[in-house]
Amino acid sequence: MMANDYIAVDNVSRTFTGDNTFTAIQDISFTMEKGEFLCIVGQSGCGKSTLLRIMSGIDPVHEGTVTINGNLVTKPDKTRGMVFQEARLLDWMNVSNNVGFPLQGIPKEEKTKLIEEYISLVGLTDFKKSYPRELSGGMAQRVSIARALVNRPEVMFMDEPFGALDYMTKINMQNELLKIREKSQMTVIFVTHDIDEAVYLSNRILVMSKNPGKVKEIIVNTLPFPRDRNSEEFMNIRKQVYDCFFIN
Amino acid sequence: MKNKKRKALSAVEYIWLLIVVIAVWQIASNLGLLNPLTLPSPAMILNTFISLIKKGTLQKNLLISSRRVLTGYAIAAASAIVLGILMGLSTHFKRMTDLIIQILKPIPPISWIPLVILWFGIGEKGKVFLIFIGCFFTILVNVVDGIRRIDVKLIELSNSMVIPKLKYVFKVVIPYAAPNIFTGLRVGLGQSWMCVVAAELVASSTGLGYMIMYARQFGQTDVVIVGMLMIGIIGKVMDSILMLIEKRVIRWK
Image (cartoon, rainbow over all chains, first blue to last red; front, side, top):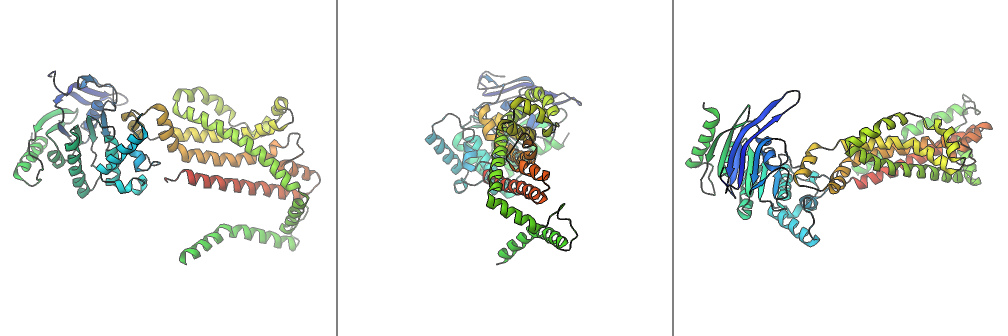
């Protein structure tokens, strides 16, 4: 671990106790630079989400340490955003109020401005008065992304955010996410089980193994943006990740 | 056009059984199958109803009973919502209060009467207290249940966004529990009307409950039935009003 690493995950393990005690993840260590886009891929049950929860501070019970910008992560923080697989919108609030929900202690005009800005960033200006039940799955997830962005986090944690969307919507959302990230320069940790998605979005891909969850390999992905999913270079990296899963 | 037809059909569906029951009842009375002393005919009841309104006794008793019911109910609703939210939010607080509530809950309101007379005398307070006892626990149980049902995913979401506790309670927990709170309020309102006769058994000289019990002593079965029906109708009207309010408040469903 180097002192100037932006994010350092050091020997993190998590054991769930109860009727069946099991170790979800074991001895996970890696570091990240500021502005990096890391994808974590692995089969379901390999502890990807557990790792993400620990890194974001939602799950404070673990061994080992996570530091972000030199600070030990022990609880959630406004400088970190979180997007879940389900949009988790508040049904009783319209889009505007959902997006503005995390904002605290800012003057009203500024709040309104921020809300408008992030709603337009995810392309939902025409729907700002709509209620969640009136939105499609893709639109709802856009609202939840805008809500996670509105506090202007330095680090964004995304737990299979596009996992429940249809293929076409998913591809649109991936492109939008890349655009947003280019503007904000935030660091992203993105959990997915979709190898294609990981290669399309990331700078590095962390492949996890199962039982218990460990780091199997970290694959560097330096393809220039915009990426072509059908190019030979893309296929090469895709194959590297694929092989990591299914060979040996 | 089609829509209008459907609406008319739905209205017929809603009231036909009531009309059939009244018609059969009237016919049976006309045929002499029913003893007017034990069950007067609908026409007789309507007559009594009109004459009671002309005399002004029905309106007066209705107003007094409504005031008692609404006062007891309002106090019960307000305290049950506050206590229920606290119990729903804190497992420790719920555990500390649960036993006493579970023991008090099954006691019939009518059995409180001797104590009520000792504590409050024969004034309005005792009657309001009986109504309160009659609906408080139902509302409380529903509120607690609604609050405790909160989706873990929304707790986690609020956690991840570092939402302050009070904002979490008012913007997440209470709206989430609102449908259950309304269920409690509606069932509780019905129960508070159910208690009105018991409440007015205590040294009363006014109210629908008093009117019913007084008429019984003189064998005025028609007055008894008018009083019963009045309670039923006013209860239904108040429930409908509450339902309208619920629809207004819970627009997101």
